[in-house]
Length: 278
Image (tube, rainbow, N blue to C red; front, top):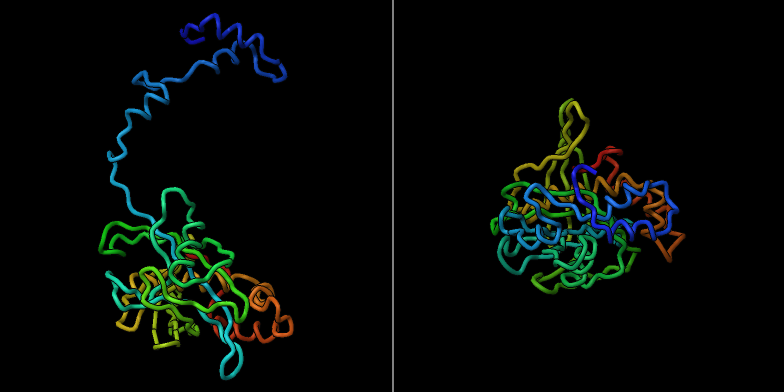
């Protein structure tokens, strides 16, 4: 027993418990002794003495790209919901809806809550696709964001600004490959809504495969690193089979599935499949 003294009461308790496992009596007795670390602390003592401020810890946010289809001139178009920020940082710039997580919620719960608070959009099933942790992505403090995307049926998204979003609206999305070389592909994202926004990002290649990279943003780009985040969401959407994505985007309108597939191909056709953000 490695020099530990097992109290007789514990040994008696072990022998009186059902023996429906393969564990020996000695091992069962030893397992019931509370473990202590090198300082002699039990778990309760360790937690009572633990200093939560010993290690600086970053803030965590959840951002969401909520996609849908909109009927406009020329047929159906892929759209994403964006908010115009009503406060610093990036005051007046468009961004994906999102915000800081509460201590009592998961990242998906926080993403759904922020989506509702900032746009009024509810009931969209969300999936995580990436984590973004550039050191300088937020001037307030060290912030890591967990990124999500979701699909809403045609005609179901009517975003309205709320919380710290001055406004919210849909933007039509179009992705075009600008350039290619063996080490990288550069893409331009055109967003057309209440204004025209332009974002750029890259897919790069190394020994381990592909990964995405941010590029310097222009005045017509999104807030923070959301050019990069949106690009990751578009790659995640592009990895869904077209038929499945079209069905999700046309629930209640099955006759429009073929048009939805065409809209997805028009918006995302330049992107390669099988690339996931990191």
